[in-house]
Image (cartoon, rainbow, N blue to C red; front, top):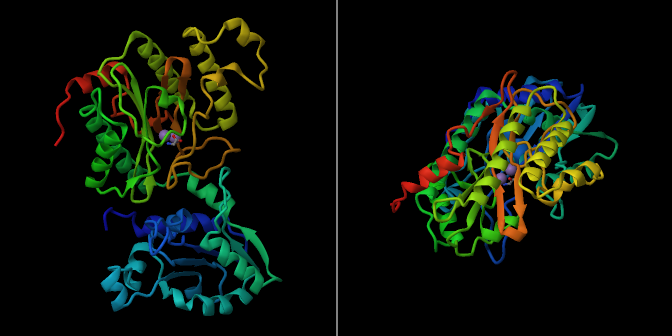
Length: 434
Ligand code: GLY
Ligand code: MN
Ligand code: MN
């Protein structure tokens, strides 16, 4: 394995948390993702479904989990199905989980081959009061492609039309939004690797480098540290490109005098990190670039302090909007009188700061979470204000990852330079990186 997995006791704890919210008599079923085809005989690298990974740690296709706490036979209360391996599979694809390995990793005593799933379902569904099925209820999901889970859910509902069905997504959003200690430790590993990649890039950038060369430096640092790569498609955007919020072509030359916005984060052991830094191509910010940079930095720092238990995320976002307004007035981009008269539903700051400040972070970069409840300890958020001035070909965003606690928020990227002068200092030590 490329990474150190979480312990079986943590996966047990995740399942215990799920069970606390399961109604009596419920049989919950979770499926892994499909291996997605490309064309001809090609396929995408396998990406495990986050929910089954959270509950088992099994990063392998054709895995199924049943949780049925009220089953008559204790052996049926947790069942894990893994793909049966064979000599042929071992030759062509390499090692797959043995039943014992799956047992040791997940902490689930009953491990069967996936081929026995249908028979097990026939035996257990008549025993349950209702089925608890999982689906992607992320606020911004777009489900044009049916997942394996969608497909299996459909089959099961056709097979048992008289069973009522409940949803596990609200439970998963709840339990995944508060991280256990080992999850935070895993996220810190991802963050540390991302930080190393940032430092590497600061030693590499100079006028004339291409954005994709910077991307390559980052990828190199990720892979050599045990990450499987980027947690999301990285944005390496110099000059005007930084004002294109989802710029991912990364194919332009970095020009002397421009600033590069870099939004990247490695995944480690399935967990995401999400960093944004902006650096001057030639190693020194101009006065104007520095002024905008420092304005964004102040918003980031003040927003971080607002991430405290008991605050509603909607109120937090409104408050950050007020802070941003103040900074945009300071930079001469907004007029105080216009702001005083603005339509509160369409605040003027959105012209320069058009995205949200924070999102949940975890197994998914835009992780599932409790958007309509108070912030709670052990939640991890990004903080990522930005100012995008198209007419100046300048876009600055700064993004760190924050752990909420009962006391002060903890900045998990605290070790990574963010002050403009610290970034310049780092760049002044430029050398050719081996
Ligand atoms: N990198 C994606 C985001 O910052 O939300
Ligand atoms: Mn980001
Ligand atoms: Mn983000």
